[in-house]
Length: 149
Image (cartoon, rainbow, N blue to C red):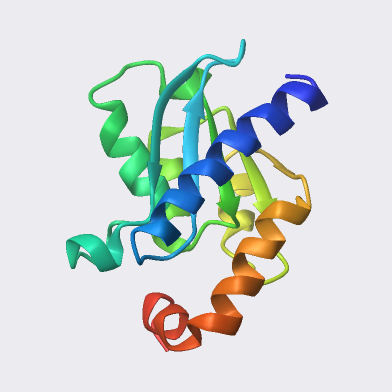
């Protein structure tokens, strides 16, 4: 998967994150894609909207993908480094790759992914960083609630 395609997929994940923010939630989004770049599912954090602490961007995206047998061929694209729940789900399903927008505002459990043989790449995407900076500036209490502090 080349750099341009990775960026296009990240742009779609970031658009999902913006949807979550517009709904009053946390701006984290994800897409699930084939190696050729076909998006098979998308989702965004809906923890606030659903009142469900497991409704992270990645888990919503995976739920939207439904039953599949090709997880090991797919790339999970997420705007933020995955938390233990989301990283664990990625390991359980055995994704080929996890593409991360940014890890500066939150360093998730990427080591679990690497230890499981999943390729991990972080784009250090300025748009993803801006999403989290906005979140931390305008709704720090909501972020603290989401990460369990």
